[in-house]
Length: 265
Image 1 (cartoon, rainbow, N blue to C red):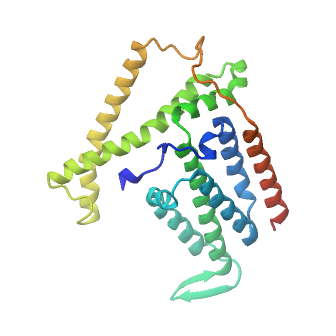
Image 2 (image 1 turned 60 degrees about the vertical axis):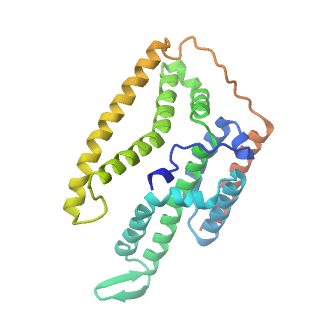
Image 3 (image 1 turned 120 degrees about the vertical axis):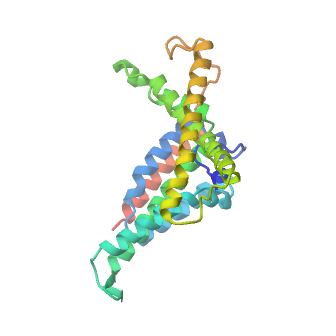
């Protein structure tokens, strides 16, 4: 499962989404996260789902690959659905299992909120799947450029986000290797009582933390050896170019927001 994680991974490609300026993709994702909350009925959620499927089609990322990578969070989506199902007691009673009652609003809210959560994860995952960490860093630094006037460490913030995104798949791969090594030594991560499973995780966490600190130290030493002293006075080898298609992306997200606003209950 670890090797199928998609968070922080970049999938090389030549789709129109891959070729977009990272700044337009960042603005699009931030706006989309806000716009999603405009949906509150069947029509708006249907349009939202169709729009998300269209984005996946444009990115040329296999849908099966996305679903396989999102399996670790499916339990969280299911938990969100059950939470709404059991604790929302509004509307007419739909059916009853013993003392447990299921109401129409609870089922509706469970479906809507779970779908919203799933769509948000899909769209934000497309950002990292179609944009390299370096491009994300450059885009963030460019967008946050005006905040330099108030002495905000824009370059350092963008660099930290980029390193975090880059190290997510690396740590996942490291976890996979440690799990296989522990399994070869007789550790069982999937069988036995819950108490034994929790106890088996401890030998996994300790080498993972040690490896993480070692990687962080190696990265710091490498940056110091190359003379890194922050963003002051640095020039850029990669120059971002805003094109007509990037403006078109922003126009689309504005039109999409207007449509959802007009169709919401």
